[in-house]
Image (cartoon, rainbow, N blue to C red):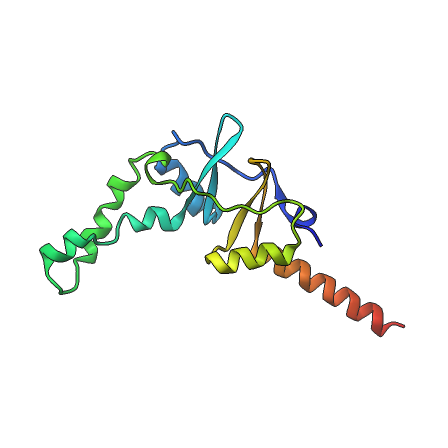
Length: 155
């Protein structure tokens, strides 16, 4: 079974100039864990929840200043307002790992597991054509397996 058979086509995208407040709104409202970034019909990056939340983590400088004790997590959460005033281009990942629509779904799953992704963009010659998640793959494998079990049982 190929990626193109089960991927979500025409995924929601944002541009590099999109404000993070808009992106995090989409993430929270629609439960997107990440969004592809497309400028001039070309995928140039990806923004994930972890990219946003990572800006709240203490830096080495914070750890040195505050000592080896526990950081002030409430103070760190207060930085969120500053983070969401940034643009996507300030936090996006530009080295995007993708899969091809012609890849086998288990090859895509292997890529996702190896990189600890829950979803991955599907690109054809650099152009975004869809998204696929581990859930999509698991559902397809499940349906394929259950269908074949039911078919064999009815013989």
